[in-house]
Length: 127
Image 1 (cartoon, helix red, strand yellow):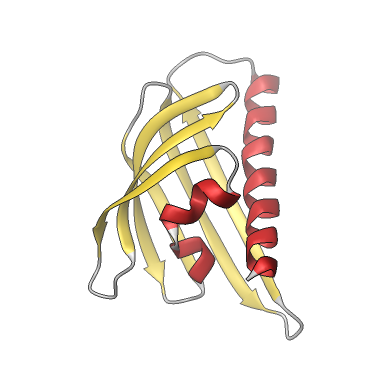
Image 2 (cartoon, rainbow, N blue to C red; image 1 turned 45 degrees about the vertical axis):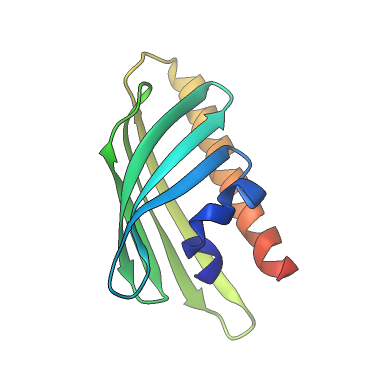
């Protein structure tokens, strides 16, 4: 969860995130509002997400300030100790303001999810 909560480092491991700026944090120091600059090929945008933390086991987010292309971006990471490591479940739902063929949209979502999970795994293993 420490890697997930380190938003300023996202450009180093989450390939499509070009910038992440913490705008607000809670009493525990965890970000509650973060501005992102995203370039995921067919989807390039700037937006703000609001975060809700459940200790070190889960975090969920939703868009609080939409960008030019994205109208909604909701998701979560859920972490579970497997005894031999950590299982990460990543959920993501994206809604666009611009029309996009379903196949292209699903491909873009898959690229975002795959990049996030692979990047997260590499980042955690490199620490």
